[in-house]
Figure: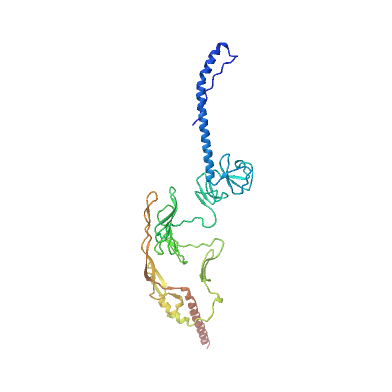
Length: 416
């Protein structure tokens, strides 16, 4: 409501007024008095209304301050650091910086008091803030200066969410989503106690942790046919990709190990790199060895080997090598596995089904996890061709020794 205005009164006649205009001036002055009275009454009503409104606002501000855990500041009263009061001048909240019994109102005393910006504060014991809602609508728990819509500060568990029904085994969801930007973070706990993570606004599964502690990224199975990766709670891991599934890089300027291999607590191998080459190393220090003897009958072993040329069934590519089970009979330490062995393999019987949502993000159909099964598949043998190097070296030495002996005999016969 705008403040009312007064119509100025005409000049009142007096003893010095000319006799010719006195009567006219008097009539004009007296005729304006009724309007002046009406406007005066209107102003009086306006002032009363404004005073009532100001009093109501002051009372509301005081009540808000009081409900926020603040008390009315009283001059000369001793306040300890952290105590929250509201000023009787502007009814705003202030926190005591250092213990004080100042007689200066907190709104005028920035040395001993800090302004809480009109925040709504709830104190735990009227000396420290437990919850703050600032003028921007940010909520702080354990902090009086929240940096976001919800800011939780303190030691121990910061956020604890608990299903109140201990027997519940349904779908429970925790979401952080920015719909307009199409980005977000979503954790979905399924009936099988799986936790799914959706990032980037997509409704599909970006990652999950299943009930056995396996963490999946880009897929929900350990099967290598699906692109993605997994890390198991037992230390296992798998990476599948259409390009390079795994890349290792040692920072420029340094050379050395890029991967190491251990058995229990003992290192048994490594991969080292330089600026131009890669080396694959296995343990060979003499201090690790005992029962050291020369290789016997290496030539006979090599002569019994049956190197072959063959193609792989998977892609038809040609290779040179050995049949593992045949080589195993001659040099078992170069071959792993057993002929015609089988092993159990986990596989995806039916794929996971993603949840569907309407335009407002309300779930229409729940997500269904993949159904896994076990089947028997070949456990293929393998050959470590590096293990053939000592045998081939010994066989070559035997052959060279025989050649040397024959050359000596031939030289002796030529002399004779």
